[in-house]
Length: 312
Ligand SMILES: [Mg+2]
View 1 (cartoon, rainbow, N blue to C red):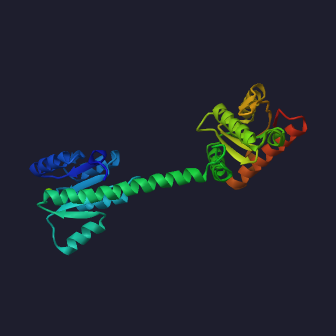
View 2: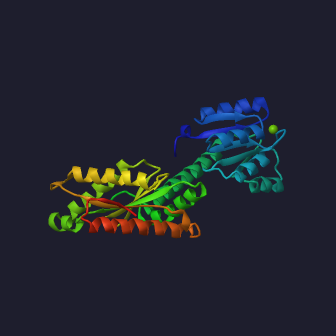
View 3: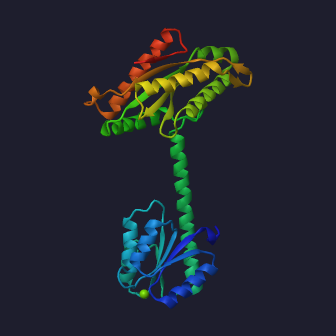
């Protein structure tokens, strides 16, 4: 069982003496306690702060506990708030109404101390479970958009996110550019130094690109093999050429350290800016067209001798 000190609890009770008593009990049990006198004050505190547990009286002037529970659920908080109603209503209909309003559980007044703490313990289990599920989901999402070798974003993320970048650029009439980057003669590195060295070079190249751009605004995705895309929002063709040239020079001037010793590696680049005459295209199609133009420019760089930047 996780220690109670990790839990922030909001206690809502309109009657001052009862509030003091309950507050003391909860603090002794280790909770980090804040209090509110009524539903309105409680709702404002919940929306402003991160609470994991709510213990609320039902009958209060103004917004009552049941309404508070309903309002909290309607607010769709980013993390789960476990809500326990303290009630002197003991008809089944009332209790059902309280649970349907969004309360997780209830305790009848006057509350037995050990029962109240035991029910809050149960609430902590739910909160912990929800936290670990949420963390696992975040981790899974991150894995699903990351290239496992280089740690850049993957093709799937590129497809989804580039369409959003196009949408944003169009809506605010801002420039957007893409750079296709491809290591020169990469096959030879793999053939001569082995695939492990080839992988190291890919990782170094990815790292170099990530360090050269303004993260997180600019981002890098692995397009496939030794080919990467650098997406540059708020950047026009001239600005994108500067970024590509900077990375090209960093690459050409600094042999990459690999286990087998330093390796001279160069890369070629193709630059393209989103064009406004294609505004009838869908955002995704415009993103794909942008990549095709950057790829065509990259092809020119390769044909003209590699280790260079071409803008389409
Ligand atoms: Mg009351």
